[in-house]
Length: 120
Image (cartoon, rainbow, N blue to C red; front, side, top):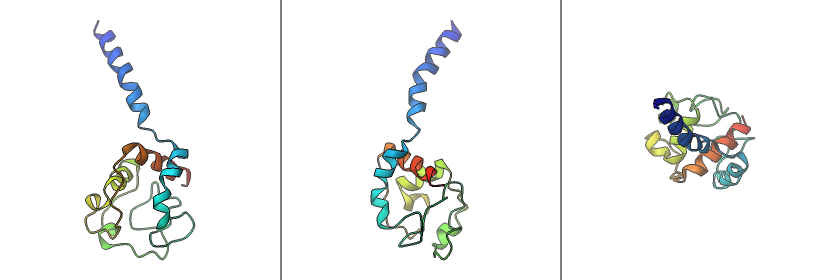
C-alpha cells in the first residue's frame, strides 16, 4: 500500500517537474525586451550573452565594464542563478547597474533560460 501511495504521489508531481523545463522557441520571443541592451555578438548597453550559461558573473565579456557588485558576486550563471536574476536582478545582486526590473512570469523566465542555453 505504501508503494502505491508513493507511486501515485510521484505520478502527480511528474507533470510539475516537466513544466520547469523551458521552451527555447518561446524563449526567443520572450527575449525580445532584452534585445534593447543584449545580443549574442558584441557588447552594447549590456554585455553580449553568447555562452553565458555556465560562466562566472562579471567575467568573460571582453571590454564590458561590469559593476563591482556583479564582479564580486561569486555567481556562476547556472539555471537557478539565472532564474533568480531574471526575476529580480537588483534583489539577486544589490548594486548591479542593470536597470531592468525583472520578469515576474516564471514560465517566460524558464523559456528565456532555455533559449540562452541554445546560444551557449
